[in-house]
Length: 230
Image 1 (cartoon, helix red, strand yellow):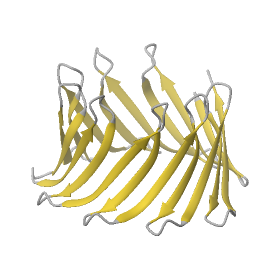
Image 2: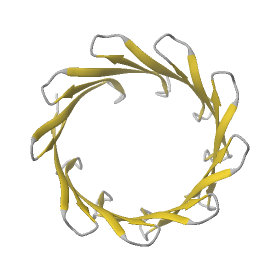
Image 3: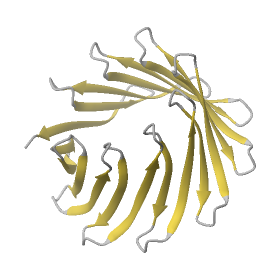
Image 4: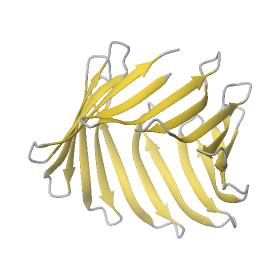
């Protein structure tokens, strides 16, 4: 599949993705506006279609690094390790889940194995994600996001708070009849509108246009997207 991102000045970048017979993405190539290859990624999967490796390469084919993942018997990703181009470990994430498969905690470690931070989630009794809190290495909260949902189960609002519980930002989302996000309004801590994004989709449900305006309603960017299937 080929995907192009274009604004009023022309194509900004282009992606060409390849998939296997099971629908898993196995290769992705990124091109700039001059159609020059700028990077490439490859994916590998286990026999349960869990992604176990993603490797990156530059335009010359040299490695830029890779991620390796491990899963439990339920298919939950329990570990993700990042390596640089030389193959040295640079980071590791360890994940913990509840008995419903909801991620409860993600612990971040550096190459030495030192804890650098943690993320924790909360859910309602139906497994709907309600809250995410970030912590530093000392287990002190550094920020939090709280989500609200509309009557159809779409995530319709995101509220950000700082470490002291002060409001930092808010985003409100609207959706079309197909469940695609059609509009996003972003507000600062004072409640002022700072940006608005409007999306359009083609008959296959692919995003075809994104229009962005500032808090005054003036257009700041319009991008169009086209797709080619092979």
